[in-house]
Image (cartoon, rainbow, N blue to C red; front, side, top):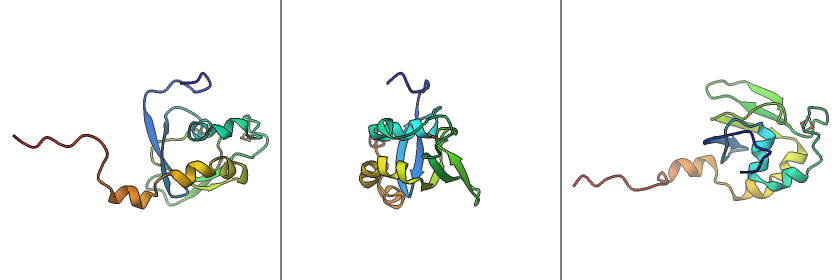
Length: 120
Ligand code: FES
């Protein structure tokens, strides 16, 4: 993986505007967005908390509150739900958002991966 990611071993699950994604753990949310769309690397982001073009709102599992954050300042965590995206981020992620499965669709599909043993 490219040098600009912090070291990571596994992918974690994010839900962004109701769509499901897998992104590298241990990275800022903006870097995780870049993993989903290379366009983020060409956006007008300062990457240091000044421009606010990366602003998002998010929810934690089991917590009904919604929190504002700067995606360049917080690390995405497993189960994080992004409920709002600043226009710049939404624009950069538009193709990824269009292609990703809805959370409701994911729940109705059988889990991906090998079939369980048949019990011979
Ligand atoms: S990228 Fe500028 S504030 Fe986050």
